[in-house]
Length: 159
Image (cartoon, rainbow, N blue to C red; front, top):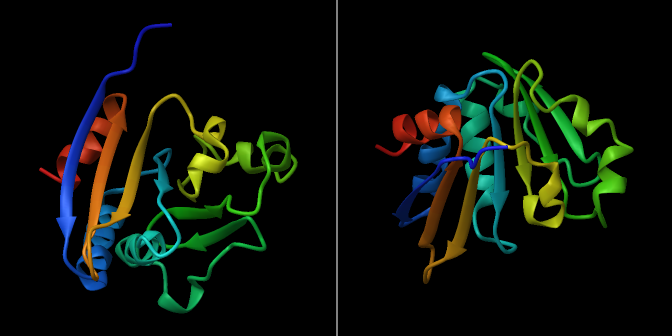
């Protein structure tokens, strides 16, 4: 198996609104088969970003909820969007039992919060977004694209 190209971009976000707007932009670019893994501490802005992505994918705001207890929540928008939250899982076996792996690479895009809890849930090619506190409401976003399609997505999202 050959090595996967990795492309990285870093952005400073000054407010939750800015994080949300960046999510809207990403949601407008997602295509079926895209996988975005989100990493960051509690309160780092993952949910703000996800809500923006859902809006950008034209998911009605009333449909967007936290899937913490359901593990995976499907949204209907411009494309099917699957939002997963792995916070409460203890490992890959817990995730496998949910049927989550059937969604990866299928119709629609997949957003996964807390990917660092079950990193093997990510496909070989994906976009990983890490959010961290940068003082006050500011956040630091580091996006890493693994593979050709994720790299193209990253270049369009954060040129």
